Image (cartoon, rainbow, N blue to C red):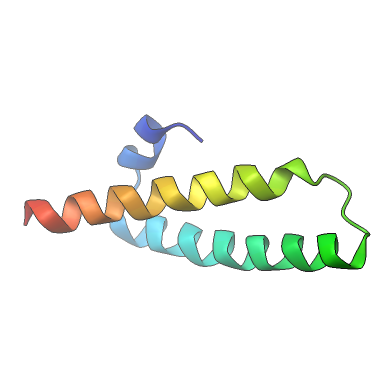
Length: 64
């Protein structure tokens, strides 16, 4: 998801997505270690999305 779309979401929605992405990254890394990952490149995508979400939350926290 692009940064512009992250900025359109509310804080609560972003926090929910952070929880989901954190769990997804954990599960994907677990699948990689077991050798059953269907799409190994998804780990990088999920990590980048997680970083974008956390960055937007931090930007909003600094403005207040």
